[in-house]
Length: 251
Image 1: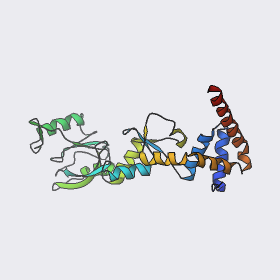
Image 2: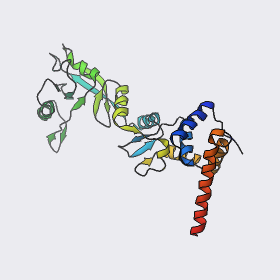
Image 3: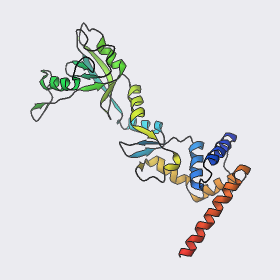
Image 4: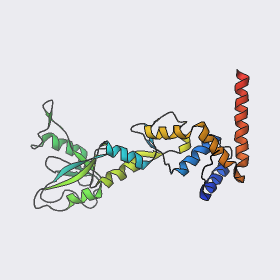
């Protein structure tokens, strides 16, 4: 039977795992092995109720589908700034560049609603009413753009998160915010048994491919050649025999 290539570092990681999880069953241990061997770092994207193989895979897929960010042009009004160095969040009128800061106006969100509902340059209509469209940003680099006094109106290209609608000065800012607030890690060993989330198609195919019986048998045969794992292999085989006996008794 073919043996798996197991590095010394992998042997050490497997030993540590089984010391901490002495009663880990065969599949749990095998999934841990796959996670380390293929450097898998699964994440849950709760908005889609889906699990992806890694953060990088998820970002790659969302970017290819145009679901992560889009370029947006913002305006910055001429004149004295309406925000300052202590401003942490701003509300921006897309038609004029008028901005309200969280520390420079008592009710900035109410103020931006009122502004865009009466803004003479707002020509967007829905059912005959002005659309109350505005941008929000907590990105320090975007906020800095509004702190400087402008001698003439300025246009600037920024990036909007398609998921939250927030503005960022760069695509990297969108991605960083996405990773911090929209996804969470999940151990590989918990992925096949959970039932709350769908598994992304490519990741599911990977799992199904490696959970084939002959590949699991190769894994067991390989571990049996290492002294630290012999007792665990014997335990797994005994558990399998016990399960088989119970099945026969139930027939």
